Amino acid sequence: MKDLIDDNTTDMAMEETLISPRFYTTNYKELDKIDVSRVRSEWDPLVEEMRSDPNKTHFKKTSDWDDFDFENLEPGLRKEFIDFLVSSLTSEFSGCVLYKEMKRQGTNEDVCELFSLMARDEARHAGFINDALREANIAVNLGFLTRKKKYTYFSPKFIYYATYLSEKIGYARYITIYRHLEKNPDSRFHPIFKWFEKWCNDEFRHGEAFALLMRTDPKLTSGINVYWIKFFLVAVYATMYVRDHARPEFHKAIGVDIDWYDDKVLRMTTEISRQVFPIEIDHDNPKWLIGLKRVKRDMLFYAKAKQTKGFIAFLKRIYGASRLGISFVRLYLIPAKKNKVPTTSRLQPSY
Image (cartoon, rainbow, N blue to C red; front, side):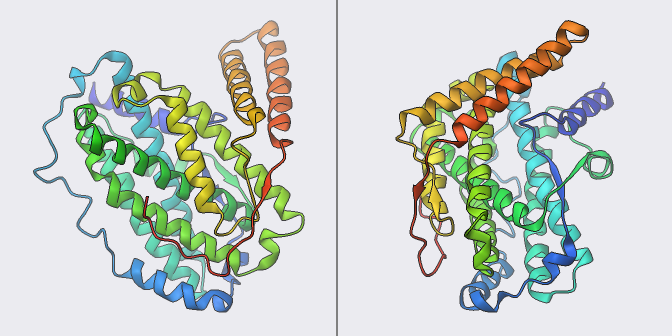
């Protein structure tokens, strides 16, 4: 039974849907040419902080790890919580795989050291989540995942935009949950939430690193690339919105309203991203929330159509894909707000 459940959990991590975490590969030779001299004054202190390894002893179960039995959870909550853990693990481990490969292929000392340090952190995060899953007699086969999961190619600049937002939104999600449960400890139904504060500081530092990588070349955040930045802002934000609304029992259990939580997390990410992006999402535009709801509706329709077979299902998939595409374009076309990027980018995780 254990092996069967392990296989099922690994299958969850292997899923390729519009909202599932992906594994990425890129042009490592291009990454190897990065010159950090333009941001050296901020780069060296950040790398030194990461080198000092602030969370070296954090990802270990201590007496604060309360006894927990997954079987005591309601079936709906158990399913959604496991999905939350597996999705988080896959996202963390995808960073580890990407960063480790850069370390393996590169020769640029600055870049290789940075990616090695980030791979170290992400490996700990994924391993810690897997340890939590083992309490339910399940775990993800990380070696199998590395070998068999489909890899998506992104050019380095797309890696910067997507990963920067992933790291910063990860920080915003974890710290929002942590702060909420600090005030409402009765809703902390699993001990892993106690680890979120220091954990998300790793995510914050990683985001700082990608902000500096983007600032090594002004072209990455100007000209036509501003349109790509907006694309990734809209895509990452919409993906989070849809994914969270697929877990109503999980958010109910921790005592947060999903709409309040998503709005807070996305606004926090936008506030942080002003350190490097020349535009920001206009969260106060009433069309923004309407657009997110429309994307969620169409994405769910398309996902349901993909689960069935036959000619009618095929037509539904075409219809669903086109409707989803139109909804995304409408969301993308909502005017962004301009932002004056500061002279220096370094921020501290003070939320």
